[in-house]
Image (cartoon, rainbow, N blue to C red):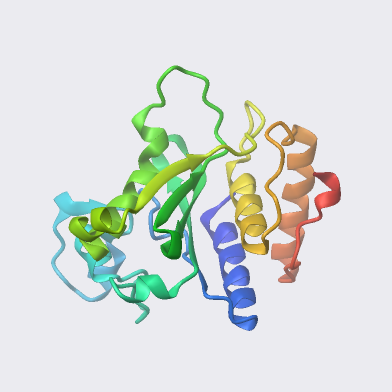
Length: 222
């Protein structure tokens, strides 16, 4: 699933949240995509510290709360807590993989929802990159001292894993995001079959093509 498709769902979910006045924030995929250029600094003709770059935004831009190249929307140490939830789709370019990170400021928690199965004794660092990047970003916004004094935590939540030998991480990420936003339970651990992924991929493609996004996922197939 491409970044453009993931972004289409993030935009649709943001519109839904705004309509019902639910204080959730859905960031788009260019915030932590694992690329090498800082579009914020490029757009403003600002010198960039290349050593500090991660994703489309350099570390300083993230500390300043800039979340897209031409937007005035900023997230700072204070208004971070105004949001009930902040949903962040993360693309790890080294393994071409999508996962979801959720910040819940009121609970002082950051949770990683990752559909990639891993059965080894110790998870490779690359599989925790998204979570670590978001934790680093939040610490930079509120300061490490405040992070510790307020008791912030981070964790990985066990979710249904994508079928082996497939390319369904984007579909799984969108499913988890939509269900978390709606307050519905996440799918059972062993429920993501190749047949289900094909059905959901087709349903999502139809929604994007028509520009009509359902308020709910069809849970009958889950």
